[in-house]
Picture 1 (cartoon, rainbow, N blue to C red):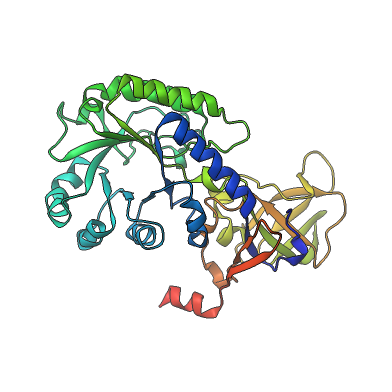
Picture 2 (cartoon, one colour):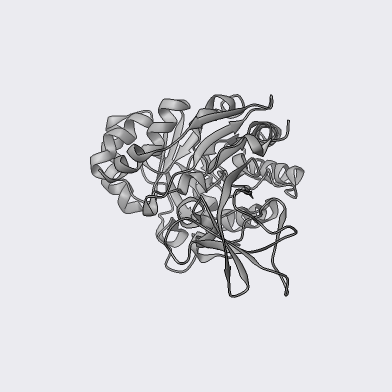
Length: 380
């Protein structure tokens, strides 16, 4: 049942359960048809109140910090894959406790910590992240293959034999890309690392596979994955998309609190913050879609959507609304579940958005709200 936004308090991140289920079904279809393992990356979506639903479709998670690993272990299940640019010595016991698979970013990290981790947990499977030196990501902030990248080991810096205890390779060079980008990446990966791949038990293709996008070619990615498995029949293939799970499944609902005429621009201040609650819009940058609005072009009257913090740059862009906004109107920012909730902050002490679910039965469930104690706890 479609969301009734009049029933949603503001500001609130609201997940549309029915759309999440459709994404999960599509992800499971790819995994089953290609005979690969698809696991969920918490760095893109970590709303653990819906983990019971997700577990019906996927069985494992991947973490990039000890907090993510613990959350995955406690709230999802015992198969937790881990990759972090560095592991801290004082956290090794926890990593060993929570992880089933652990990938090192560098040979120096492997040399420092492999012996201790393997002693702490003899069942961990270890991998090395590699850099295929090929990426079609256009934004440098999200491109791990730029010159001088700190992420992954280049082929020329690896021995011809896998280091002791290493059973897998991991690469992550995609960011919301399609199956054709994966196909091109695999050509570079296999060309540079063929000898090492043949020694592996598993290969992790990382994240960035936007397989729930409406234009993603599902049947093509299945062919690409099958072709790789034909080339390396002994290899277990793992994929760990983050955005694909929550793609187009929810919103940030905010309310207009003030309308200011500023040199012909209608400046809106809402009860949410772009800087604190939608930082990806500034980092990427991109202008999110708002229901009932289009991005302003030409000479039409411009409405600039601004946040509630005192940062001058806390605004998201210029829009055109057929009807002028007024105080009390709701703003529905679309596609705000992935890489948005996980990045929110308490910058400026602004009110943190609620978290809720619009259930498939047509009922709104408030999962969590945040107050002063949440802000104070962050600073203590």
